[in-house]
Amino acid sequence: EPEVTQTPSHQVTQMGQEVILRCVPISNHLYFYWYRQILGQKVEFLVSFYNNEISEKSEIFDDQFSVERPDGSNFTLKIRSTKLEDSAMYFCASSVDKYGYTFGSGTRLTVV
Amino acid sequence: RKEVEQDPGPFNVPEGATVAFNCTYSNSASQSFFWYRQDCRKEPKLLMSVYSSGNEDGRFTAQLNRASQYISLLIRDSKLSDSATYLCVVNMYRNRDDKIIFGKGTRLHILP
Image (cartoon, rainbow over all chains, first blue to last red; front, side):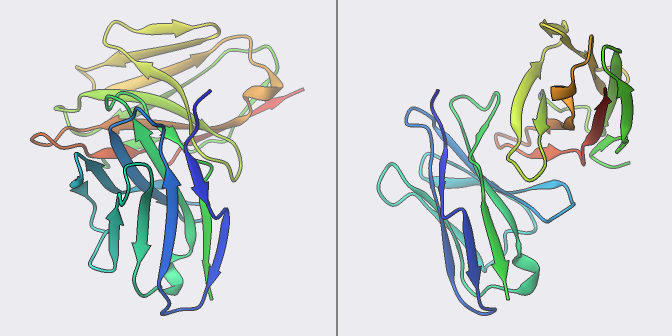
């Protein structure tokens, strides 16, 4: 069964450092998403991406966040200057038609 | 009213019983609806999409009530492996863009 692959599975970074979370969506999917889940809380939408541009973003997705699809297969989330409150599980998801999303297994980001 | 609301539970249900939970949504223009399950510290996995006419997949039945703005999930003959958090997901198309909202989830414990 096709999978969404995320790397790394766990990243520890110091406050103020930049991090890049990587995702390889399913190859024939066209819509890409990032979500995050702070421990014990609900899954929160960050951003959706289609046709090489952001189609929707949430209030959480401020200037510190950016996404890229640099080479047609990877989909990255960059956090420029991490804060303690950015510690969360970050999930990438992709969809072929916006009906149902396949999630990656997540990257656990710990900011210290 | 919250955009997507679920009873957090937990629902403690004996094995073999039937359990049902609902999810309400605030935006009447919402277009597509899903149930996901999430095991502890794992990614959400699509359980089923919810269609206007209602749909069934084995022991699982999902229904949509647009007039009252809720969706439901019914699990028959519950198994120990059904223990998980069930996430209601609503895709509220805004203009042409997605706004995907997760409920906080309903925790289900199936008791032997």
